[in-house]
Length: 413
Image (cartoon, rainbow, N blue to C red; front, side):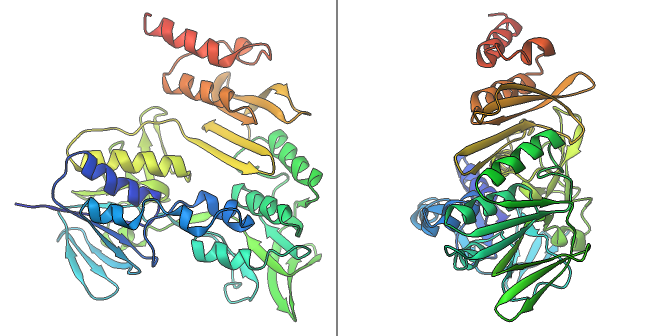
């Protein structure tokens, strides 16, 4: 009997899973459901090339439309799934259609977090979808004043893109430094410095209490009483996982859908991957919900292999990058704000890396325009190899060569 596997989600995770199912030899019916009126697409360009006008929206597509036809994938766009019957193995779609499944992957991603009460304020945006990016891009004219609330990855990328096209940009961050929720303060302060050098006004310790429309402008009111006037405001304060289907269906949920190392949920034949999945990670021995493009892609592939009957635990070391101005920031591992930082390279020349440690153990690597160092430490962490910190942190050490030698020795070569 032919089986039906359904994938819910129009991001890179959903597209990857559908492809991986076919590549793994699954010959049954594959249905890929996207609530947006377009096939799966890649989101990293939205805050960079799309906002700057250097990359057309069409180039963000995960695959050409013909690819889905050639692979025999039933693509459903512009229709949301409204209900999941886990026991009955059925989905209800917004158009009333009922769809049965033998196995299901939830790759529903997340929704941009906003400030309370500002959804209806004209000129206030979040960035999560193509439509969001196009709406913001229309406001990014040379000389326009933009306020960005939040100095995490999305906020910093939007600020850099807006500044690149000639906007006057102010970034308001509630923490003491940019990126402080994910990186030690010294690294966040360096990134704040980079933005200031490009003409961005970066204000930290600023909590926004309200946003309102006044005539042709938007005013951001800080809890301190300060007012920031702009032509537009972008709120970049993180995301919340789209786990409502799982919640209503009775699946185990805690900061995302709980899954094991094979991406299996608490319900038989139902899997989850990407931003929405809170997964047990065998390499680190703990649960984590990772919001990176690479993670969504590779975890979704692992989920598809497990659905197709090939046991594949997902245990990749998290890795993320961010391009801002002429800077390429890369992070691998599990950094924490209170990690110890060991800098190596040329900080002033914007070509350096940092080894992060906790209780003497390496937790992560961060680099600016020095991707090889991050790649080397990521390989070391993936292989569970140990290298003395004094050697790793030595600015004269060739990390790539050192890690290669260490892994060869570990493998007995």
